[in-house]
Image 1: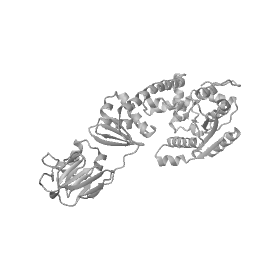
Image 2: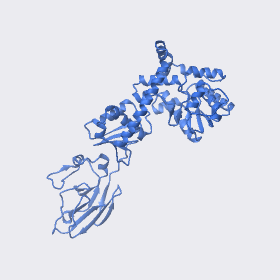
Image 3: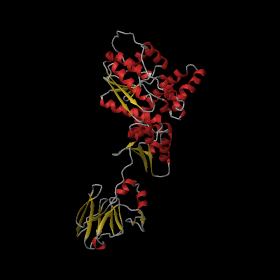
Image 4: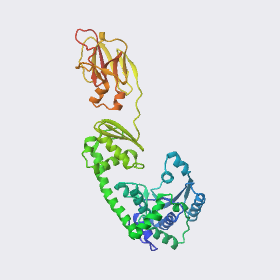
Length: 457
């Protein structure tokens, strides 16, 4: 991004901010922990705010984990007041949140901070949320994900700009940040938990990465460069998978459906990315989605069961014959019904359709939506009910009974549709699987007396 002339010489750190500044942003929300990274970022932004024509608003979340955290919050509030930056400070009992959500304290803190910043960004009408992650953080994130078995998409690690999140210092080393802070005499607080070896990130920072640097002094810059190359490849893949999802999508008013045969025909590398994109579209993100979840979807896709489903973090995925169905939540199953059917009039069904009945002297002919019965062969009352386990009927044109479950399977009628499909019954006898198949019972004929005509509207 190009800007006008400056009255001051820009440092590499400030130039990094300038070069990556989100185009058109007028209001920035800056996450400030009180550590040297976020204090440096806030200070640099105050120096550049007039040139960038942007307003700043700071945010600090007290995790209530350390005894010093309340003092850190006061430090941030006072610093922002000194620099004339509006600041919102909130607190959250992250340890309790971790227990409630069954997460590690680290993950719970990350989620709480993310939710706080997103909510505050809406309240202050921020165009971007600025975070102080730097090159060392990027290397640690890469190593963490590598150790946890992340795929290539995860190894792309953090991006400078990603949706509303902006990390302008991602190309700067911690040494550069410290040098800048010392040059400008900036105050900051030290988070002692950053030295606690019980956290995996700290083990990487203080033990593993220093060993890597002994082997290769360029280790950090090379890993940072690798993440950038992976990101370029991921951008290409993203173009392919979005196009693939659009091509494979089936008509669906509820969630997202992809054709099974077309998915199975894809190269495995493209297929797994297509599945991830489908999850992304129905969930809004891929947080808590791991390789094991994608493997479960693959097994669902290629398995022998024509109907099966999975409850995954934040979403529901089902195989329904020749389609894979993605939803944010499982569909709500309809309630059973059992309704009396008048011999002349209309009955509204639970799904909004209507059954219209009439008694007449002559046959008019049947179709998929109309059936006719010999009224004399029917006992009263007639009822319309939902499917029950063990239901059997005699399909027209066939000899003997057939289980309704088998009929549904033969005709690839999905589980959810089975529960809403009306059955016209006379006592225990199924006369019509409405809209699908009539039985061979009570067939009307010329000269057999009155005819009951039932029509699905």
